[in-house]
Image (tube, rainbow, N blue to C red; front, side):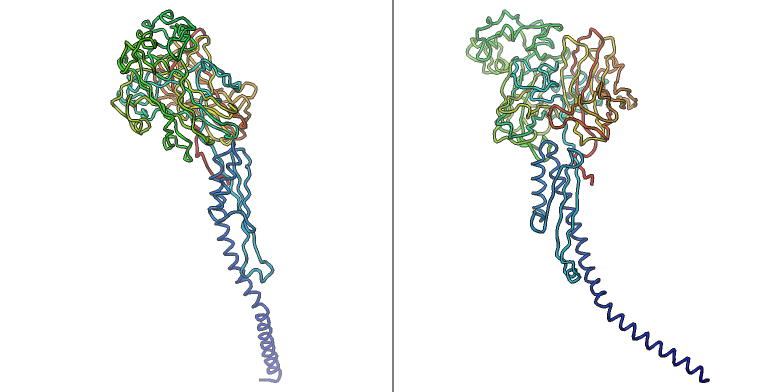
Length: 592
């Protein structure tokens, strides 16, 4: 090797030695940094675990509290805070829980923030880290039908309690429930066991939609701070055969009773007015129209009323029964004997519910008058009390059977019982409302008009973007040889992209008939309804709720979609029908 080559080699070896020294220095300098990052990774892993926990708590708190919106944000907030605390995140020096109304009044936004101490990050100047997560829930609870105020149906002998403008004293309908052996074709979709032939929801002569639990009305108490007591009353609670217009030919004449001003019994001193017969064109204000049908006239209908307390599941059949708020009323199918059995002079009082020759105190208490079911025991709870009404429990059955699930096939009631419900409110009556849930059986009876508008269902802004499913059964009996129409109309004060606020009309809906044939309904109107084709049939209208839907949710009288039923001019509006309405989709959901 030449001298020059050996020089180059010496320079290379020297360079390598120098590089090795530099690497050692770099490693020595970076080791603390690398160890710091490793330590920080431990803290970061903890942050991810804490973030997952915080998110779950925020989700749970939001879902628990939202069910009280929009009416009671304070209760919703308290519930959300309680759920967060029970999961280990009570507000403290290191935990904050912020609860507020979301973008819509039906939404609850919950933000949970937790400050954790870093095990190693503090060595790098980061002693703590705050982890925050937010959940937003939306609630679309059970929607009441039929009435925005404290009365459901016509109100003879009015209380004079204040009413909203869309809850008239006489809405020209009564609640109705038929005995289980009345044919379904007469208009009661769910309380009748049998079909005459051709009705929707039947298999041969069996009503496949029969529900032995009857119907449910919700008595809603919006704010217990505004109400001290609620007394529940029923008008004409017993079934008494009078004819649909109190026109049964066997009814006693008005002068068969004592003159007005003289007590007929302990309950009535105006019998000649209250008990008087009527006609189709002139039904009396006290006549709900109990009656039977040509093929079913043997056994009177027994009606059972059971009031249940609010329940967190909002399932009425899971709600506790209030023992002091349940009654049974036997039926009466002999109109000719009314002037006898309503006369308290016919002593001794009857000891049998079939005695036609003596005074019947229960009939006198209920016939064409208001009867108190009970005063709801205090302290009142905010939410829904559930009034269950059914006709498949025999009179005199043990009280445990009154609310028991299932059908008692030994009960054979064969009459249609019409009645009304109201609440006597101590405090602010506008804090109480009564509406049916899911299904609404009514007997519409307007002697003066061929067109009528009814409250259908209350839809809060939280339902924006969803769909109302509205099914009507056996509409059109009053149409005669003409055609009727059914139109769904928006709430009076509502706005939204498919709502014409000036006319309260809806631009378009869709409909599906009993043959599963679909139609587009311009103006959300279904016309062409005839009694010959639609008798005993179900039809469903799907009403889109706009994404930008708003309404006056702050009042129980706000946010009511309505139904306008029109019959041919000159046709009297008289029809027993069942309406069902619900809002599609999950009632409680996380939207963020």
